[in-house]
Image 1 (cartoon, rainbow, N blue to C red):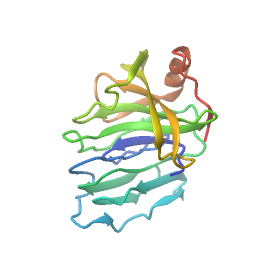
Image 2 (cartoon, rainbow, N blue to C red):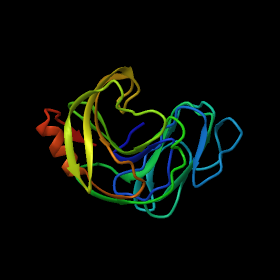
Image 3 (cartoon, rainbow, N blue to C red):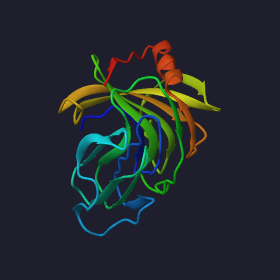
Image 4 (cartoon, rainbow, N blue to C red):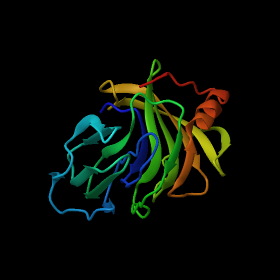
Length: 213
């Protein structure tokens, strides 16, 4: 599960972007530009793992529950479909990550289930998993999180949160780590994300990232 910055969709989406589009999913079935399949496990498509495709870093991981297909497309694009999945992540972007201006667009059909569309990444020293959430479905991923402030960026207001994960999967294996969140108040699918605005706002709120990977 080694990643850099990803544009993420927890219940995936097909989005060209400047970081990485990440898909993670927790329940029923939905799609991103592809029809969900009925078989179980990882279906035909790009294999699990990470590497370089069409000039972009990509990463795809699934816990093996349900059915999920991830496909690398031309440039920074990808597509994903799923059915009755547990948890998966897949997308294209950059490794290492860091401050970038992300232009993205696509379709995301996970708004009615437990899913979210976001830019996603990790740092080390300290180990931080972070999300800039552009849209979410039936569950707000910042629920029960500690609010740290707000940030104005790219035509919208984002709420800043911090959460803690204990002995969960990470880029260094099972570990305890902190999560930083920027959750957009007005949901959207498409636009610009200036990641440096969020990194700076997190720092002002006392949330310090480590080294981008």
